[in-house]
Length: 140
Image (cartoon, rainbow, N blue to C red):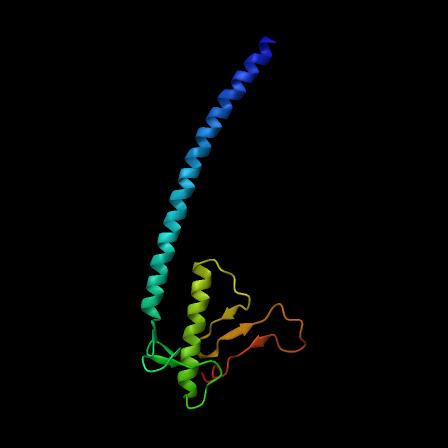
């Protein structure tokens, strides 16, 4: 019975030490989580400076990236192909970088290659091509 009480006392001491270690590690985890969030914020701010996306004042839902107009969905008429390829290439690169830094997997992974960026469809059950080249991306 005496050995049982000693073992119980040792177990309680071990439990108290383990709880203290757990609290320290929880505190460390919280600090690291906050540090990672701050770093991600800084990276996104840097990406916003590198690839600024701004609204075109006179048109609804129209934007520019680094001063080059992004076309509205499916409206490519009157847009120079080299400008279109540039804008879409920069957008693809921005999406690729943000997904990596924020650890958000893309359903359709982007392969940024400047004006020849690609979008892959790894989950498609369709026959045929599983890599898509957005219109205007084949210029360069």
